[in-house]
Every structure is written in C-alpha cells, then in structure tokens.
Length: 409
Image (cartoon, rainbow, N blue to C red; front, side, top):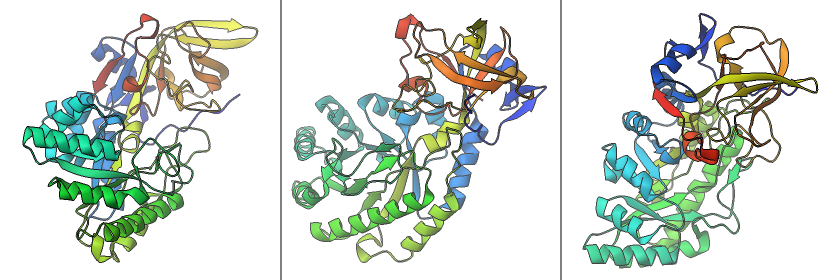
C-alpha cells in the first residue's frame, strides 16, 4: 500500500459525494456534459487570496503567475483578486489582454522571447523582464522602431537559490535571467537608451514548503536588490519582483507552508529597508499557491479488473490531462497525489487499488496501490491539487484523446 497525498482543506461531502461550490460531483459532471472534467472553485480561490493577504505585509503586492492556469474564466476571476499578472509567452499576453487586464499591471518573463512577442508586449505597454543583454538590445531597437518608450526590467540570476524548492530557477549557470555581476552595466545601458526603467525581477525557485527557507531567500533577495541598486547608481529602485516559491502539499507527509512566519519575517524586513528600497514597489508572484488547491480533476471509472491479484480501476481520464499526478512532470520518485472516489467520498477505504487512465502506456497511472473505498464502473474519481499545471501543462492530444472539459463554480 502506498499512501495518498493530503486532500486540501475546504472540501466536504454532500449526500456521500464530494461537493465543490455547493454541487455534488455527479451534478458537476451533468452540468459540464461529461468527463473528464476540471472543476475550479471560486470560493477556494477567494479564500486563498484572503489568507495570503492577511498574513503578508500590506505593502506587498500579489501578482498571479498566469502559467499556473491560463484558462480565461480563471484569469477573469483573478482579475478581481490580484494586483498584477506575470506572463511567459505571447500567447499568455493575448489571454490577459482578452480578459481586459490593464497592460501596465502585466510583466513578461521567460528566455527566448521572439521579436514578434517583444513587439506586441512593448506596443501594449507591458513590462519586459529582460533575460539577457541581447534581449535588451532587441527590445530597445523595437521600442525605437515603434516610437514607444519600452517598459524594461531586468531579471536577475542570483548566486543563491531557494533551499528545498521543487524547481530551482536561480543560482549557478541558468538559462534564466542575467548573472548578478552583469546587471549594473546592463541597467545603465537601458537607462542611457531612454527606456522606461522598471526595476528588478529576482526569482529563485518554486514549490517550497519550508517557511524558514522561503523567508531566508526573501531576505537575500532584498539584500541583493539593495546591493545592485547601489552599484547601478541610478537612484532608488522603482520596483522589485521578489519571485514566488510558496508551494502546496501534494504528497503524504507534506504540510502546508507557515504563511504567518513568512509574513512576520517580511514585515520585519520592510520596517528596516535601506534608502535604495524605501519607496520601491514590492511584489511577489505566485501561481500554484493561488490556484492549485482550488482545482479538482474528475474522471469516470469505465472498467474494474484484477490482474495477478491486483485491482485496477480504469478511468476515462489520465496523464493526458494530469501529467503531474501521473508522476511524469519532473518527479524523480513517483508518489501518489491526493485522490478520492468522489461518488463515495464519505466512505471508509476498504481495498487496495491502482487508478489508471485510458492511454495505452504503463506511464498512465493516477494512483498506485492506494487504499480506497470499494468502487465500481460508473463511479467518479477525484484528483485534487489540479488547479495548477493540469489542463494546460499536459499532452491533451496524446493518442488523439483531446482536452478535458473545464468548469468554474
């Protein structure tokens, strides 16, 4: 038997079934017209942002990292919650503009931006987080051609990283950002070009649950921003994007991050900022922490079989929609995500079973030898923590399966 990850707080049963937004799993499937189905909860999105704001210093702005979930209704809902939006492609630029988001609230990071993407972002008035000196020259030239003063910031590759992060984005050789020792000269070039200098973006890692490590890294980010601003010699720093890093529990043994500790440490640092940062606009960018636990993936059991004494529940879903839950999205050792039999949510587990998808590959596994209530064909399976890096980060067209339905309730 292999343990399942912890089901996020906020989910309950109604009539024995998993309920989301006041609707049972079967009601949601009927409303959407079938399975597989991603369901996102407005109430969970709202409460997560409220929880975060209550813990963080009032001065700290909260940005939504669109890559976590770029579905239009989710972006539209986050428009009323977040202070800014961070994008990583021209496609995401189109999505935020289509949602009516003010371009001045949008920043664009990511290596390998094409000229057409820079052109569209500069024309719209979006801030470009530059990843290299060459990208800076291209952005400056495009601004001159368009006769627009481009809004430019520099993404910094620091010499430190976020301890315990699931994905390290800074420290050592990286395709992301400009090495810290090269930043001052680049910023002076940007200022001399007449561009609208917007500040620094320092992103070190993601999916960390260690509050002490996150607070330590945020302190290091503030120290580095102060050092670089003094070396640049162009007055106070206009804006500092401190990155993200706050994760959510996926696996057995994971515990929620201590937001109160992070907020208290930040408040202490904010109370004693150096003059270089005294009037700086400070923000963090978060994706999965804001939307991950608000999403559930529902699929239907289409077959129940026993092979060599092991029970398999075969569903109409799978890794083509939930690549991360299958263990094929950067996981070294496969562990079970939070999962339940949605139509028997109030029942006690009575059997060991593996939940697999409909794809013709042994990689398509949603739960491995998990203790679950006895389930039959027609029952619904719920995979939790499905609000981030699910529908848009999975190979929906693998084996011609196509995308899942999506619903915001």
